[in-house]
Image (cartoon, rainbow, N blue to C red; front, top):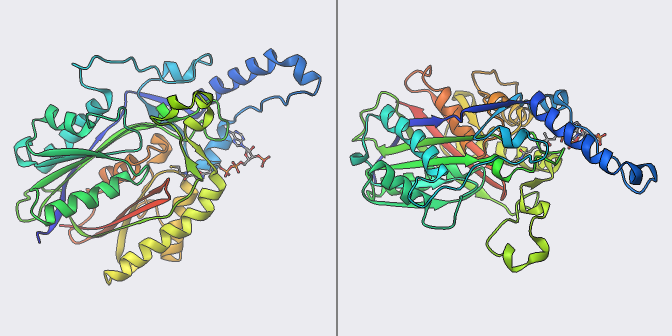
Length: 373
Ligand SMILES: CC(C)(COP(=O)(O)OP(=O)(O)OC[C@H]1O[C@@H](n2cnc3c(N)ncnc32)[C@H](O)[C@@H]1OP(=O)(O)O)[C@@H](O)C(=O)NCCC(=O)NCCS
């Protein structure tokens, strides 16, 4: 068995940002138009007026101030409220591939590696833009990597689950290095007309290179001490979009074919599960929680992260201990915890311990214990 390190991380940030105020203005314009169009039915008491959204509520409830997106105009157009991402020909790189490659190139550069040093690509994300050929194989070809690639989806936990798969392959000698890439266009499956969730997501792509420790020469190495995964079925975060939709015409275009959640229930049920899993994982590795310098947590909700770390530490965590990126990125699904890792790692001294953890639909939870080399 070989020891494994994360030898490089990468991040692609989309070109546009939308503030809460901009998003709410578009939403409320749409609400006013809808209410005006149904004014008579509302006056007759046959229909409830739609309530407006509120930027202050969004920041207070979630910690989100703005989000990066692949298309801004389509989302903010009250007549559309969907990103406009034109189809590309089969001869052009697909948009997920393009984002993945940008993040992967940065991870390779930080690792001091080229495509020739990598034997596999895993694209791990919540939403794959087509069933096949695998986006990972397209990324593999775009980067010029020999070997194999495959796609996998464990929703928001895709990155940590992908890291465990990559770790296994490197430990067993099946690959010298594996790229795990998480391209997320969450705005593509977000219902911008749902007041409860229209503010939740943003877009981004991240990449992590996992390498055999004895081969790695990067100045940015983290030894992977252990990984632990858990899943437990829940309908509280769900999306019924899929290839059988066309076989049931009655459901096509329904709201359930986009992201739907019971936010309160998710909050209540997932926080204790995550704290318990991380706590158990550290205990199994004889690591006291107080020795962990950093928690790079999934970035969905600020209070959720504060609560999880408080349950673990028995006190409030500082901004250094549990870095926040969701204020400017929102929830980028599987990319979130890796963005936190990418942006908040260079200050850690050699020997420092950290936990990378994701959680989300499934339910699914992943924990990766890292030690700075
Ligand atoms: C989604 C989330 C931010 C909502 O926050 P919340 O405090 O639970 O909010 P609720 O949905 O209970 O709504 C609280 C109130 O705000 C109102 N509200 C909801 N959306 C609103 C909006 N956009 N603008 C203004 N008010 C809003 C509700 O109508 C409700 O009003 P009421 O108390 O009069 O009934 C929060 O539940 C969350 O982040 N949960 C975890 C989600 C998660 O991690 N998901 C993983 C996804 S991968």
